[in-house]
Image 1 (cartoon, rainbow, N blue to C red):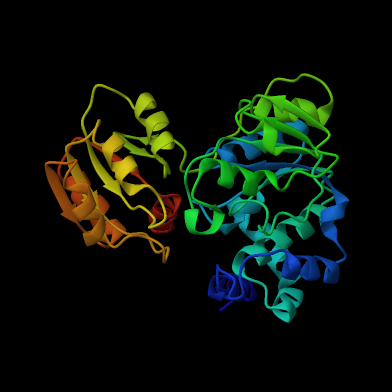
Image 2 (cartoon, rainbow, N blue to C red):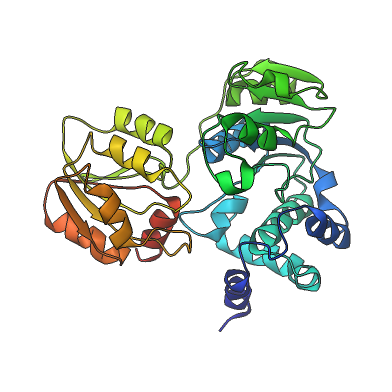
Length: 344
């Protein structure tokens, strides 16, 4: 096994969840050991329920920087906007200190991104929050601009049971010097200590960062509306995201749908919307431990689809859908797309 493979295997062995609850204390301790690399660049902090990764990539391209996003589809390196070799070096840079503080997988990735940005001379970055905002590992940057993409019900056991409570957790990343860009004025009253409030999206966030009105640069990410010879892949994992996807699917066609959905997502809302474009549903399960079991997802799908199968292995599920002929839609989770990408 190579040193590089050892670093990746080590990363994959780390727990994605903290054993002692969410918070930034361990993350701050790790960054201190690394010389506080997060102070070496200015940032746009992107929070919200959906669309964060694409927004972060497009903002980074516009402001002339790099993006830190999650999760990934093509490989771990995608999160740091680097190549596999660069990702290996980034892990090697933080491994000793991450082990010393007992960092989680996401804390390690975040520290690796910040340290890599600093080592590469990056002066501007777009940083996507992981879970919520207030207690997220990314909430260690004093971002000049904060973008809230949208708010939906997700991770309610951690973030709260109402959209307002969830919005408050996400917007807690906004410090006193931040310009906060909101999609509308719904949650503006939650912000009392920021420098300025604007309304809009990624373009407005990039403009606020640069201090002038700019057009948003194009940028793409794997797993976002990929079309391949009659097959569509998209990581839509909320009802709103599925609405967006359904509106953009090549039509008129009926799709055989292959999907995995995480347990903490609104599976019923997702399935109801997917039923608009398909009569056949193949339930599968990604390797993410929070994924619904294929059989359980199939049971939830039966009220919406006349033809439902459960095939746990994603590769076998996709092969089954392809063998049926016609168009195939793979969706419900970026983790599912990542699993399939590793096999191709």
